[in-house]
Length: 166
Image (cartoon, rainbow, N blue to C red):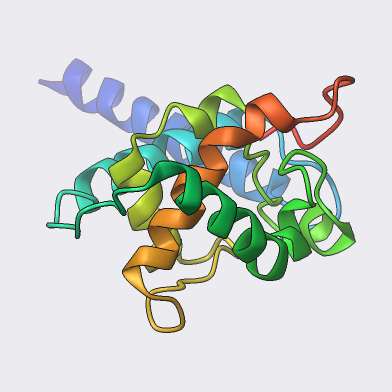
């Protein structure tokens, strides 16, 4: 019993020391790039929350994909390019220095979201990420147009692949 209590005390002390060390290393500034562990944890948490929340019913997509993509291109230029850049993979100064950084919409990580998930993200935004909710300013059809246009971005991305990493 005494050995178990000592072991528990040592483990508790180590956990407290580890938490204090981690807390002392945390930098609240948005200036430096986040570390790999922070990126990994934030990405996993975001994906899990989007998957969980995107199961609500959504309206059907517009029937004419070509027209939807063309309309999405125009809307993207006025609503999204201010942060993500015109090609979706080279954020503007505003997108580059927000925290977290504006996502590279051509990245595998973004393109792996389902259409339903991208629709949900555009409509609802992502709290504490800089991604605004467009559900009160754009119609569902316009949001679908953006989803369809975002799907074309990898093909339209700059050949040198310059852009944000996440």
